[in-house]
Image (cartoon, rainbow, N blue to C red; front, top):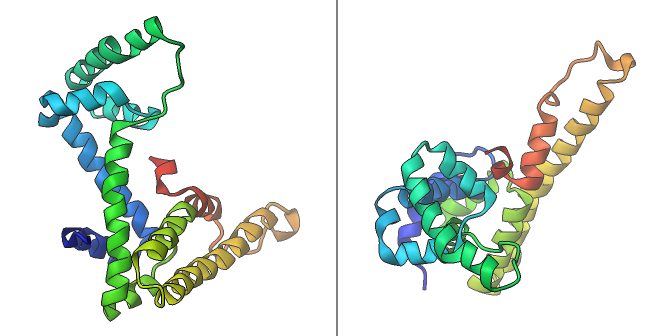
Length: 217
């Protein structure tokens, strides 16, 4: 069942034409969840039970720490340590943490947004044009777009959708490869006086393409 409320942020992200639009959606969801968990949600019993059980990944612990709400973070840490971590250490063989409350919340909402992306492409010609004009998708979100489209859209339309996503990726990737190659060649003294062209930020752009914007947060 498509929840059409998610079409608004999807359209807003695709209207930016700046980097991977799914990374933009991810960052927006992440900011909302960080603000929420350190705000009123922190004291809601059902949420505290979940955060006590799941904890957070290193990335999201770091982001909560940087929010400067030390009291809110300390309250979360106190109950997580006492009700989960130390009990686990005392009562069973310690395990490497595998879950994160915030990652789970983001994943749930992002899945809905990806489904709406496929829905919009199916139902709106204007959105098809938006998708075809995107600069690129990072590799992980490109895979997510294809996977979601394959299970959520009409089978006869999926090949065209996948082809449009692939076209965006190849157009950007081939230009990016040329820029990275020229970046390396600029360190040859024979090319010292040649112009950089678009290659000065090629390393950063390649990393965003390969690993997403989250690498730089």
